[in-house]
Image 1: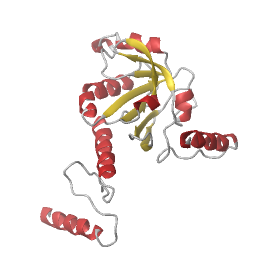
Image 2 (image 1 turned 90 degrees about the vertical axis):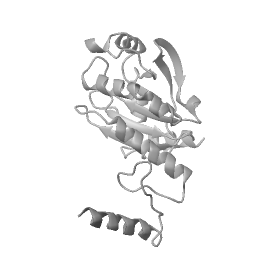
Image 3 (image 1 turned 45 degrees about the vertical axis):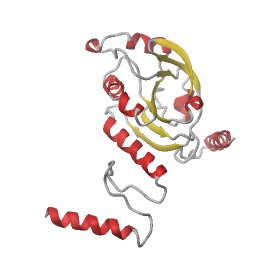
Image 4 (image 1 turned 90 degrees about the horizontal axis):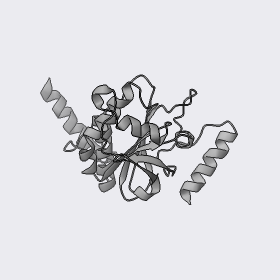
Length: 221
């Protein structure tokens, strides 16, 4: 119900020429679409992944240049995301048949080879539009969204077409999200990684972090 209301309000704002509501903190727009999984074409519904975290990333087009480096990088490290109870989904405006043909092409020839996660077809551009990443050229920008177990978007970032993303940074943000959701009285400072010190969002308690950070900085001088 909340997700439907969010989409209704966002659509009304768009019709009025006003900026859409931010996705972060709101339910992820649901979709059902054809996808390629293990070289088979299946129907995939985002909401059926509820109970898991989801890394949803958009890329411009199949059979291009930067895109395969990102897609295969996520695939090569898929087990790391699986260990964090997370599914990875790639999306572009190509058909499921184009996805399948690209997957069946070897990497050394510019293809993807076997992938560990689904590639979703957004041929009608409805998913890219719902997530606000459809460019004026009709392809998706390099948008990345992390959705939590409750189906709420916790993180989004959008790159232009010419430069790729970092799997390391995506994983780091995912781990930070999971940490603060498991420890709601703590927050993660800049560059936080598992094992690093966190802070309490309190005027007094936060001083513990800043004092320790100051001592560390002085020791490095």
